Image (cartoon, rainbow over all chains, first blue to last red; front, top):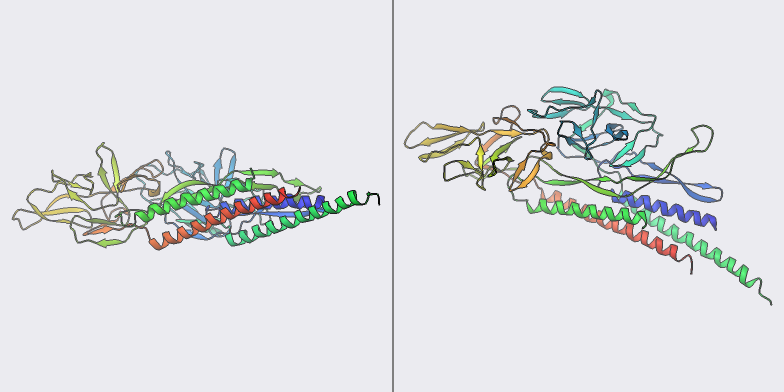
Length: 228
Length: 262
């Protein structure tokens, strides 16, 4: 009976994670979460969530400050809680001329924050290696880092990830930074939907197991002891 | 309340906002110089239900943390400054910008606003104005006895005065461009104001320093494409539906759990 109860708890956790994935089906740069369950003793329980870092569709937006990375790698942004990884997104300029994300966190270059001269800059271009130039004048190269294939970065919200210890810079030649593109969410609604159905049916099955076991015990307690 | 229910509800709200943005785009499918918008979302904070656990003596035996997300939120509504189609109108005061740049407009309160809508008119003082009567900057005066107004691709405005045969130059149009045009604030009436996010304007003559060229007798159509908006609307509706299914599933699970005790 405890194992059936543990599986109910695990399925509930899965449903919560699936609901969050589905809510973020249109969040650009979002990576879906997966729940892993493991047998602990006789019971199956949720032992961890993992971020699926597979690439989402890259779509064109033509905005000069929409950035995406084809293949592996993350941009580095500075937040109050330290450096964070993002897969890209739509950036803009703040009053000081820094390139910032939607929450105002600056995008970091190899020499720290990048300052775009606020007056008189016409066009900002970012090439495949992450070199930012304003009207042909180089301002600095963006930091692009990768993490080990088996690393599990933590989600922080705002499509930010907490970097893993295995982080290392990607050499400029191996980068494929795309300006004017955004990476869509990698949630597949069809797959999430079928998983949700599966969760529902298994939840029902686990509940049936509990009520059957309860009925068996009920018979044991009430009927066995009956004077004949 | 079940976090799954709340996450799915934020997903439904997000799709609703997206539909509002799409509806506004579709309403402006025939507005000259209109630029379509797109709603951008980001995920909410995560709850770490259980941190990373080290099971063995080495780090190799660890369980990853259990993180549960709380849904999505609207991060920004971004304008997409893509070039719209150039429509021939034949009217000599219709000017389209092919390429980058905005016309500068002096508003009634003295502020400068920017527009891509080049359906100009002439005010009672002979000044070139936008269709809603705001004067262009720098101001261009068309003399009373002028005929045959021509605007060159580089912005030079010439007219033929009285019975003169040689046309005379009466002014030159300037354009302004921005590092991040999608950061501009929409004022309505096809006007935009610069913000810190868009950067300060850099001003120049058309066709110079990366500015677009002008085309007289044409207007830039709205860059809204009906088919694209329709596809967006369908995906928004399906995503709305799928989030409602997540709510229904969570609800059914609650019901099943309630049935544990009879």
